[in-house]
Image 1 (tube, one colour):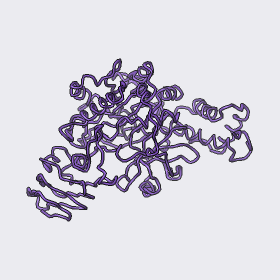
Image 2: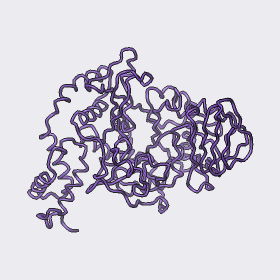
Image 3: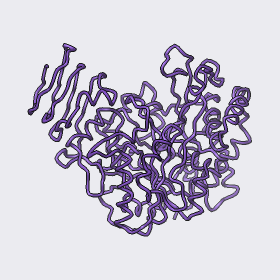
Image 4: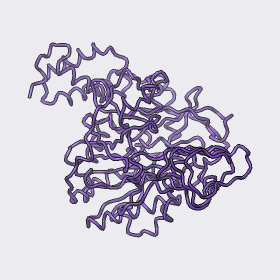
Length: 539
């Protein structure tokens, strides 16, 4: 192998390339943005040449991390404001891991660092390893893997005040039923004690545990069935002080995004407990994605890859163009760019599914030993890209104080591991429910339940789910049930269904084929009677 010290005086030597990789690995450390890149390259290359370490990449990464601590003074805003946040979180009983995560995010915000990922800083990923090529299966690995489902969402966007996973979806079963049965079926088939846990929120914990009591063997021996995610303080937009809302103190806090998975595992002791019991790998996915089951081929691939982190990706279609996509940092490793991180000027390229071909399904594989090492390396807080969202302190009162909510995405951890991997999976492993339109699709015959209890798109749909657009009159679950009070319509031959206008009721036996728009301009109650529809209908 060619030594990285060859041609070391050339501006674009292998050593310079290593520097750029290390720079990407530390890209969220705000201080790096303050220095001239070429000068920093010269400085680090000189230090590396002097030491000539066996592993120059690790040396450069550690050099940058150490330099950030020595050269970056705390910015004045952070220094002035942080004590009030620390006091608020300590008084609320938040653990150190949760505080460290918010501290990192708040420090990035007050540093003035650009939170966007512009087009000029990234490159598309042309190809990925394909799940279709996997053949090896090693059932013994199930004994060292834990399956985690994220279950903290209340489904407020669908008008719910309980865990979305408690919705009755198909065959009289809820999301939680399907998940529990998937786990038990996997254990039965392979005769291995597959470990299972949920990450709940304080809002979903009680209802979820009560419901799952009917599955007494679901909890893994020696492990709790759940650990809970953290919360984060809302930030007053005008002066960046902790938001205050005495009328509803609970409104002063917000979820920190599913990137909180990692500090929640540390702060609750879950990560250490799993490592102590010999678990090495974790498969994590959303509870509303019933296609994301434990897959032995993927586990075997991940273990053999030696990667610290891997992301399951699917091919983007026009229906996915507004969602985040996989990319490469120029001169660096893989990263995830979410819509909120894309500058307005780059929106067209962001939505170019021919250029950015792959999206994150939020089905992730993590080496737990590497995760523990990363927390040690980064002083207790993974440097995940920070997403800033503008809200009002009381979501139901648009006249209330304007605030900022800082969030992170769990998939964005791919950029924290320079040797992270990604793999292309079939669409059958991605069937999430974010809206009532998604729910209607899964309720219909366009999806079927497999023998291993996955919810998958039928072969007749040729990998493309029906596009469903519902009027806002049906955005909540109770409204959807008025639209479809009985059997859902047949959508197996549907390309696109649009429903416009309130007070529509679909009778049993409705079949939609091709692209159909159903409208009710009158506002009066109207019924779509049983029959096959292949063209637009005005009721």
